[in-house]
Length: 279
Length: 246
Image (cartoon, rainbow over all chains, first blue to last red; front, side, top):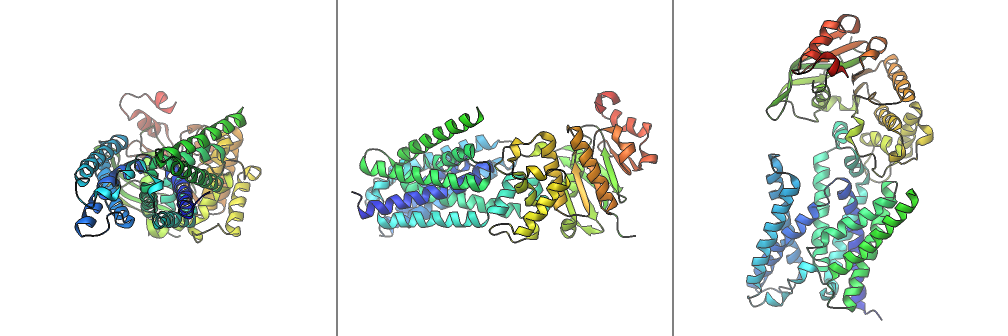
């Protein structure tokens, strides 16, 4: 029997999976999927800082909205740091991502150990942001994350044509006069929003997998982008809701891990089907 | 006579410290122009800088007497085939239809009329039967024709093409040359980066010969000469003309 709260959490995680599948598909095709990893890790100091500020101000440190806002803020800082590092062309993007990801995460971990000693913050359950714990989500948390995710889907679907043109051939899009910079920023904003929305349920370590795995699996099967988006959304929803269900039943399993393992099963299936088709 | 299709003044482009093009002054006459030169001569760089895809250190380019931003709707671009990932999940029609995006609203599906225009462009390069095929399952020559169709679908007055005849089959070469002549008959102009010197005499009106700077330019009969070719292809250190032309 599934309780009302559990059902809302499952729906929230499914919405998150849909958004991760759709936004992740564009990010994958644009070669930006790994940015999700940098954003996820860069979010931790923001979450910790937000919890500390809220509790200092005497607020409820479990409230999700300020934590997500903090996550988004340091997520943006992480992206700006990345841009700064790669601007000269002397540091490659992969090295820059590694530097940003690890330094922000280290900073967040130190902050977390300090914050845990503060009264009011210790109970906020911040460590569940690392590996994700859907079971601890309240109904309103799940609705907030789900609504944010569905907003991202709406924007990505509305901008389907120009985003596809950008992902396929940036030079041509630029030559046509499409606002390539603004489109890239929009895509980055969507990536950031999905990462942040996914933090409490999936956790910062594995949120990248929710963005990449369904999209990669869908790409193996679909010949055109609309089909790829639909499949990625479906895979994301199944992985998201399935993972959340498993972790609400077995509280010791972090949601992030369950979601990713579910996604990997789908990916393996997609790989098998695409191999059989080629044979 | 109206303004020339392209007018380039003092164009200099650098990649970091290394100059790729230095002080290019050139005015294109209408018709079919081949941009010739050895590897690294700055041929693709000239097209990209003219279109604002890479920054120019100095100089300015005008199309039909207009700056780039105002001239854009009259320009079409055909990048090198190898510049994109052909495993991208798109059909031939999807790719060609991208050319119609500036003409329509962005949101939602592309209007039927725009899709029909894209279909007509595919038919013009002999690819009507492949409209729904995933682009990764086309041959190299067919992919090149899809790119040409996309440029045609831009319905431009000036076409800037980067090596559309590189490594294509005979059918594709014939199709592309026929399309180019059709464009010129319709009063359009084409600037084409090109490497096969044997085709120049028969098919092109003008040449622009580059080797980091302008080595020769003008009508084929006047400018496409042995000494100019030798200057361009022998002009880079450590290369003989035959090696460079290979």
